[in-house]
Length: 204
Image 1 (tube, rainbow, N blue to C red):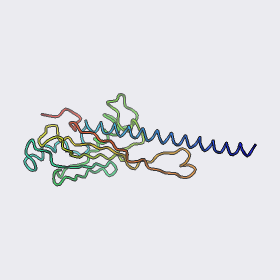
Image 2 (image 1 turned 120 degrees about the vertical axis):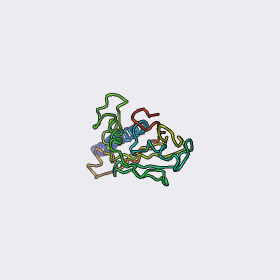
Image 3 (image 1 turned 30 degrees about the vertical axis):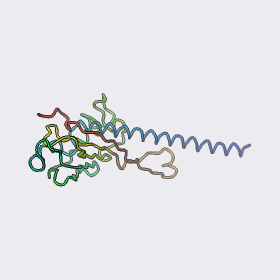
Image 4 (image 1 turned 90 degrees about the vertical axis):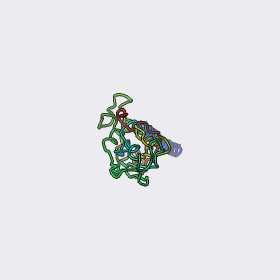
């Protein structure tokens, strides 16, 4: 009888701990996925992390395109970890395209905030208000021209914005303590079409 109880208790104990770990990881996954969705939405209606991107549709006029023409292709990757924006656009991007840390903080922490969990409304919510372990170093934003907008558009180009996470480890209650188990969060990704790429109304 004692042997059977010992075996069953061991099985039940493993099952219980495994369930707790699974649910905690599942919560982290869902919270991070929702945070990425919110980050993409905020990025679509805020100043771009690639400083000067919202003036790109004007800067290509005459040199690369006539007013009303399709925007030349560009893909700008802004990495919060390195604090750099890199353009792959065959001369489309100006040389002064810089990384705007304030714009990245707006996406991560929310509008008018420099900390997590202090949002008073959905409008002020940033990525870390949903998943507190996200920092600017964990966020990568890619602006890609996908056929929308036109050269000379007053509100700037209308790229597709892709927000993803990197270098964000999952936390474990028991596996990390017992076995040193470590696992990175997958690069959860959300894409959305940009609107005016400005925190204020565009000037016409």
